[in-house]
Amino acid sequence: MTTCQPLSEQLTQARLDREEAYRLLDVLQDEATQQTTLPGLERIAPGFADWVITALFGGTYR
Image (tube, rainbow, N blue to C red; front, side, top):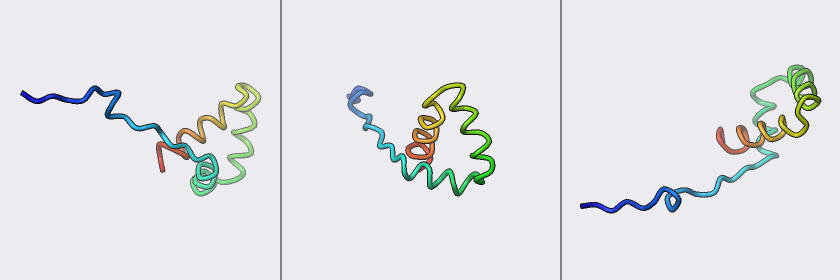
């Protein structure tokens, strides 16, 4: 019989890097598209665009 650690003990805290997120976004998306998309999203949901960019490009895709 094997004993597994609870999932909560197997997880590590995510490290998010906002500066790295925006550097990676610059590589993946041109400036014109960023200037069109991000401000529109910011008007609809303030802070959401920054959260998405930081979580995805500063954490998940690093």
